[in-house]
Length: 219
Image 1 (cartoon, rainbow, N blue to C red):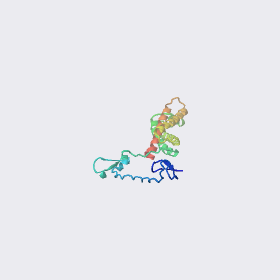
Image 2 (image 1 turned 90 degrees about the horizontal axis):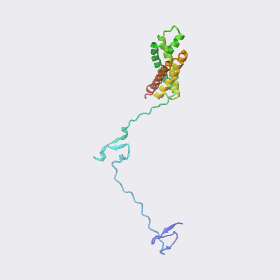
Image 3 (image 1 turned 30 degrees about the horizontal axis):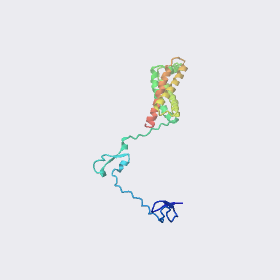
């Protein structure tokens, strides 16, 4: 049940009342409510482009607004592609193999002038082998090639191939382990071979990461 206001005194009465209970006047329908006002037409904003945060006028306070030039604020920032760092075993092998070859070549030249645990082990098995001959170079390349494959497999499996610091530290651990095995097989108490293996492995890991990022991915 609704109520209507008396047009004379303004008191509320039931909607079916014929006379106002307060003033006794006959109830008549009140005037209809005024129509909603139309919004005033506003002038076109000559700087409507300012509403876009990406642009701003070069000189908003001078000259003809219709001839103003705008610049893109996004041009202040360089858009760079986010490097993809995901890697798998295949990526690790394709980078670990060339890294092992290069590291083996360097270690081969080192062993041609410096006798280490690997040289002693080879001469022990092949007494007629020259300690500073070309065969040492070949064995070094083959040894580091296998080590590079193992390291690449580990870096790809653990997804550390595209992270230089982690790849270097992982390579150092793998190289130190390989150097420790050579020291154990030769049976000496000098741990210089372990340190040399760590340096060689760290170099191999850093090189594998560099090859993967620069050569294969172009980062």
